[in-house]
Length: 95
Image 1 (spheres, rainbow, N blue to C red):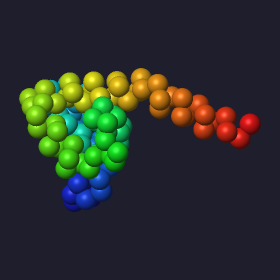
Image 2 (image 1 turned 90 degrees about the vertical axis):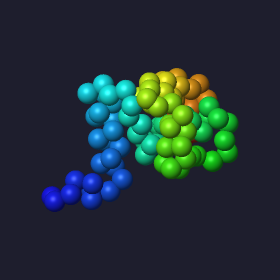
Image 3 (image 1 turned 30 degrees about the horizontal axis):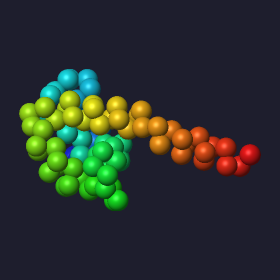
């Protein structure tokens, strides 16, 4: 493998998350992460999900603490009650 970035869009997100979680870098912003995009969409009350470029623009305002903002948005994503209710409803729809 000559260029690891040629794998596609998944590798940069994994690399960013590794830098953020394992190496605890403070200024990492995984703009290609789906949960981050969904959380930002909900927090900003947007009708459509943000693109990675739009997430980059938002993340720029939090420099040099973008990793902290990402963690807050991930926490919001995981604790969002509307998401949990929808998932529960979907799992019981066949009953």
